[in-house]
Amino acid sequence: MVLVPRFLCLILPLLIVLPLCAKTTPKFASVTISPCTAYQSPPPQIPGHLQTACLTLARLIEQAYGLYADGIRTDLSPTTVEDGPSWLRTDFYKIDAQAPGQTHAMMNGPMWQALLEDRFRLRVHHDSAQVPVYALTAVKNAVKLLPVFQGTCPSEETCAQPDHFTADSFDLDGATMLDLCRFLGPLLDRPVLDQTGINGRFVLHLDVPTAVLRSHASPALTTALQSALHKLGLSLQPTDGPRPFIAVDSVARP
Image (cartoon, rainbow, N blue to C red):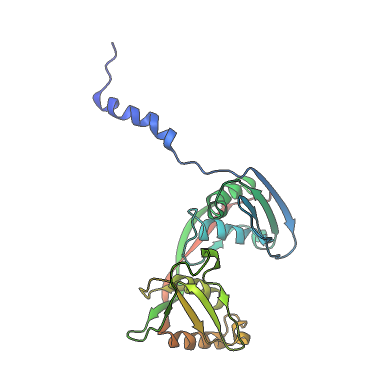
């Protein structure tokens, strides 16, 4: 008779059950990858069907491993892609994939990662570096924010989108402070980190002329944004902080 140690009797059932409980990522039922030449807007999305705009692989990686990394839309600052071959940022692709019954965020995140890892043989790892940033802070006793009630935005995709443009201003409807940081970062010469401690969604009216808004990372735009934020009781403070990025270890054309 073979004697089994008591501790094995306790853990063997777990070893048998755990593989059955392991979480697996759903796969797309069909995928078509087509080279294209320049940015094109995506067609209207329908449930269970994901059609991308004509984008570089770097942009597709940023979306899959950043905005929708865990299968839900996050409020993290944009995650950039580092390293990898130059064609990551020059070759454009348009992808049409179908997964009946899956959510938009799941298709854009975990399922998208699996697709990129399979079809582009992509391997990445997450890292960060200390870089110059702006800290978005709240000016004590000066915050003037107009709250937005729950349900104002039909979906998270429609919140925090620039709207109501005039020659001298525009609004961000239903924006969180992290949404505001996400919006400001690409306009300025460095990332923006939320240090306001303010929760909730707001209508943010920004007195920035449209012509100045187009002057990417210019001193005039920085000054205009600083002034507009000051009217809301917010401030941008230059400092150093962590910038997350995705390092590409290996990749190949499909």
